[in-house]
Length: 107
Image 1: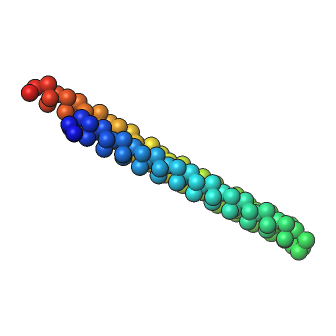
Image 2: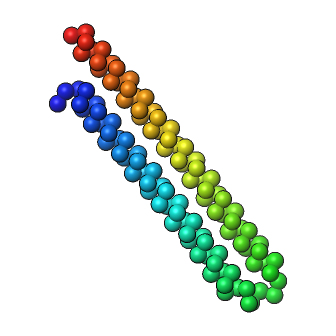
Image 3: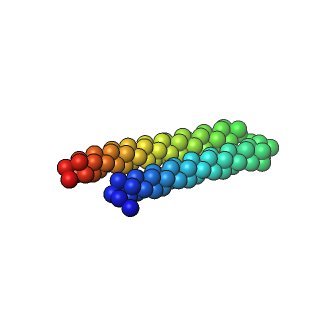
């Protein structure tokens, strides 16, 4: 296998690994959001008849919304990190590809 092919194979393998990370991240975010929604729904359903003051329920729901926002922020940060990693991978691949091509041309 020549160096160009090996370089491309490594790039595609790493790119696939990052895509899989991105998919897992997306699934984790969705799972977390669904769990928080289920908690909010169940809390509202079971507590609406027992809470003498609905302010407590609203406060709890507000806290759940804050947790969901924080989850979204953390997901966004991690997504940005993965995007940056993908850009760096691509730039490095192109740089190595140029270097390899120049070396082969000089032979």
